[in-house]
Length: 260
Image (cartoon, rainbow, N blue to C red; front, top):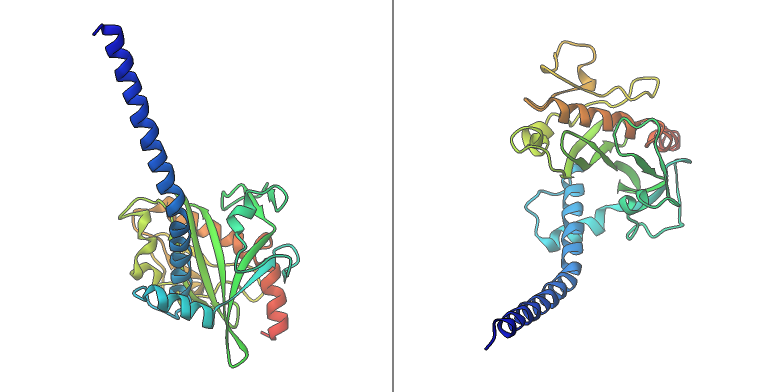
């Protein structure tokens, strides 16, 4: 056999192996996509329940689904008007996908959260008890040191007091910025007040620790140790989402509606 024939056969075998491998990889990716989508939804629902103080992180898949369906009501919110809209199915609406759609979003000039574009519509969640509003859960996101942090903040029915705050997706440095996941740090948030008497967002993350004797202590949370930029990122994203470009109009209308 000539060297030319041997080389041709080797190339053909390599191409055949590559083609078969590609088919298997593509097939696996397609077949696993629904599972991946379901798992992401489950993680999101588990995070919402935990931040709202409804369920622990150890709930089973079935428990998460049942508890979420029974106690959490999603709404698609028009961020500009601060009112709910029925243009979209709240169980299917993807606010992150909307943020990438020029028809459903707009670029930001004033962008403290460093997210570049803001969707017009997003999904918020309410919890009711005996027909009365118990809490509201809002999606938040913004850039930290290395990544965009995606999370939620839950508010009591006074629409000012924090029930919980947490992030379900980020890529901050483990042991530093990654401590946003630390239950000890998350435990500093419940009870904190987001707004002052004029309705302005005044919650801030304080480097060096909060002075309990400070008159602003109820509006302050300790910064993450050794993670200045991540802490600043969380501070900035809260100012954005609690302000006029975020949920400010919605919360103002809801306060008037609820008489708080």
